Image (cartoon, rainbow over all chains, first blue to last red):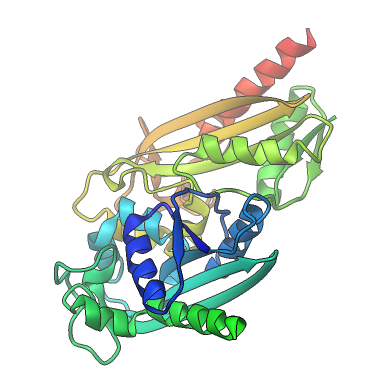
Length: 183
Length: 183
């Protein structure tokens, strides 16, 4: 049994469904764990996993997602959740007025088993829209247009989103890793 | 001998001068220490001090300063340094376009001696200017107008700034505490 540690029920539902479809059982550990301040999501996630590994013996993983905007030097990056809560999508749109809108979502999954750590990264390239659009998804979805699309992530169906998303790309790597390990 | 732990030489110079004028010797421990992610500077500072106290036996203190803007729900707050680096003062000015500009600087000092922790907070009320002004100070100083002034912190002389600043107010409390303890 693999434990997924997150305080976010939405994330747990989305990720557990996909893993169970691939034949892996997931247990939800609803826990807010400590995250350090750092510019890089991989570093934050690795540090959290290392600390959690002293308390948790079963295999477990963490998931972190951030939005990185090129013309804002990677802002809001690892602090996406804080920034979303404080200035929201209108704040991001204001900051980008007159600027290049290239951006990407990055998901990092850190998986820990027997005190060994493995990281899987999924990237979705795209750009920030001129205005908020769509009612699906959450967070920055209504202002993010994936490359090759003319709609925001919040205007795309859940199935379509799941087929291209940063989270799916990271998760697919985790599933491949788990499958190969089980062989 | 009291140790001041900071990686920021500017902070060390400013703070050690004031403490030495009050008769306290300060040793600079140039160290980047771990900070957790939290919405509240006091919580972050207390956590860092607690972790450092397992390695440092002598009395020591930490200093943290954040800018809190009311109409942005306290943004950038504990992430002021990250936000300043990423979107700078032009970013803050854009975010405040058409919004109330009330803001405050908050400094938290956490002092640790014999595994006991004491926190001292200094607050400077003010507002965000319409444009960047002045060449003194650093960080958000060129866009912060203290209450009762018509100039930004970067247009005010260092002496005048030090007489009113959030950092001075917190430091004065630390000095009072140290003086009373020595009686």
